[in-house]
Amino acid sequence: MQISQVLQALGQFATGIAPRSRAIRPLEIDLDGADAPSPFEQAAIGSWKTEDGAILIDLTPDGRFHKQKPEVGARHSGRYAVDRSKLYFEGESGWVALGKLKRGTLSIGEKRFRKA
Image (cartoon, rainbow, N blue to C red; front, side, top):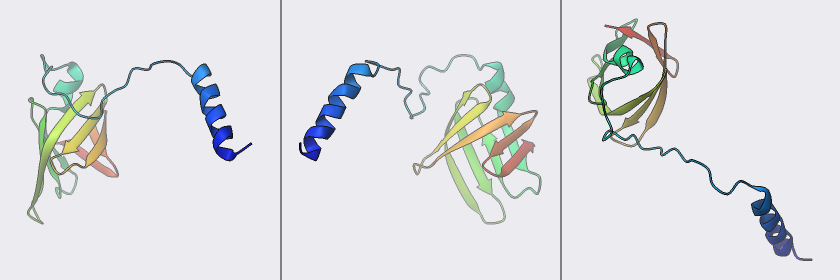
């Protein structure tokens, strides 16, 4: 039996035992269905800065963010979405990041932010 036939047989077997359909969560952030902000969104909205003040992030109620590094003069912007205590960031250049909000601290990667 050729390897391609074996792989084809395994594929057919797997489709027989795998669930037919799953709910798929899109990666893109949908801003069209924006209603009144949830308590989690309300906690996230505002200006955030690192302890040393090197990075500033402004989260607006319309789901946009503006990030700047004043010392370097760098600015980035994009969209964000809140899912309970997790924040999903999508920059205009295509990069994505995950943030976590816990006890008044916003963590994005190794950086920690507090309300400004």
